[in-house]
Image (cartoon, rainbow, N blue to C red; front, side, top):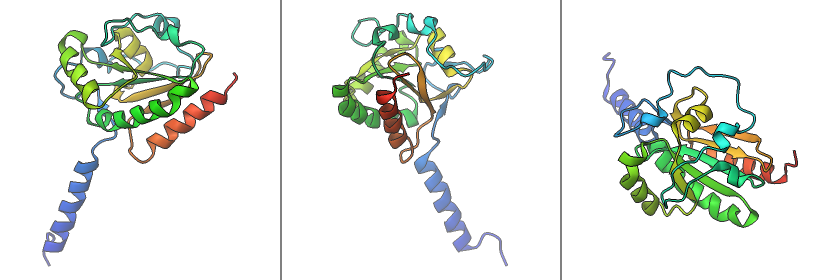
Length: 199
């Protein structure tokens, strides 16, 4: 009996097709990309897990798409979702519409959202602007500085990464990668928990 029977061949092709369709849940920062110097953190040693955003992250002035600087310390006292992403990252593209929906749902309750691209701000300016238009992103978008990206990623170079931050600056939940079924309700749950968290 032949190993590659027609039925086995068709079954294998279907499984491979499904794997390709769903793709990976995250992109490695070292994946080939047009320009990703900020997110190449494979050489940094993972330290203790972050519990709060350190001053170097909070006080860093980062470039935004509208020219206004983004400073995470400006969001203290609010529940904040920080998302690290890149235009070339397929899971980031799948996640963005879910983030847009979440922002529409929670903005009126005082939740803020900041999307920080890990790409080079000069090289990716046009592609990030086009991405924001294409996905109707209405939350704050800019570029993570190298120091901010390395500190937040803690040696895990995969994107997207999202951080739900409480009003007093604690990291309530960190998400690495994106799964279309699992991630949106978990993000929502973490935001709800952060909203009722009093420290």
